[in-house]
Image (cartoon, rainbow, N blue to C red; front, side, top):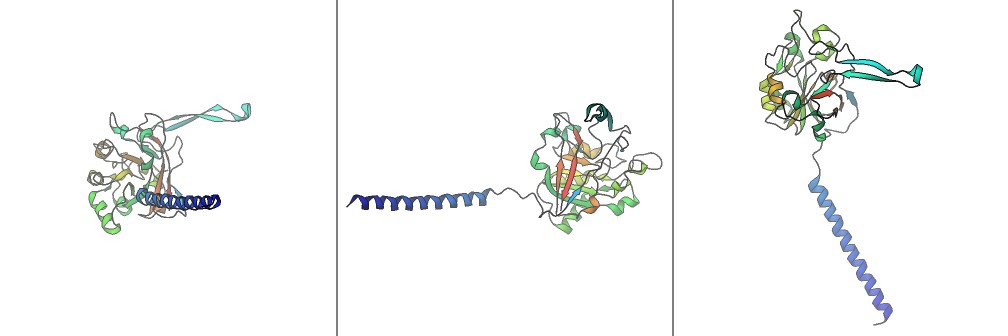
Length: 270
């Protein structure tokens, strides 16, 4: 056989083997994508962003009644051409996170919350009508069961939020207290959170001052939900603008090392 013929045969064999390898590699990659696609986080294509965060200052209601944030000028524009504040902040003020460490000696601190638990399907349980009649209304297990009956299973990795209409009272004394000066606002009942602990729910949220109702004497939800490794979000805003299912919540958690919680920017994608 001539040298030219040998060379041409080798070329054809090499091209044929390359095509085989490329086909195998493509098939392998396709199989890998098919078998390793991560759990979908976005509930649906996003067309709107809703801010679930209150802007807050030293007048924002707090549990202990003390200012949750205070400002002082550290650098002023007139003297320096730029400006910045020195802030004194208590962790649990404004729209904020309760990390497990808030109610346990060795629980997960806010900087240790896994990123995948900060972007989640949002489930909303609405008790607005009940809250109009009774300030200390609570979401109970029956409300969770009714939601599931009406809407289907709670998505894996979800955040379940209570909607009571209470955020509209944030500039009023009644956001925190009743006419006698007692704490009075809706929250979660322990029967509800006991049920949610059996499901793949990463956090609960409220549009009020606390995860527990205002008249709670034992903080039963704080004392069981947080030590179980789940977290909470308090003082959410604008839940009225969202459907009870189908939105995705994005929790902009603070990341100061060893924190028990902290103010957060929380958004919903719908």
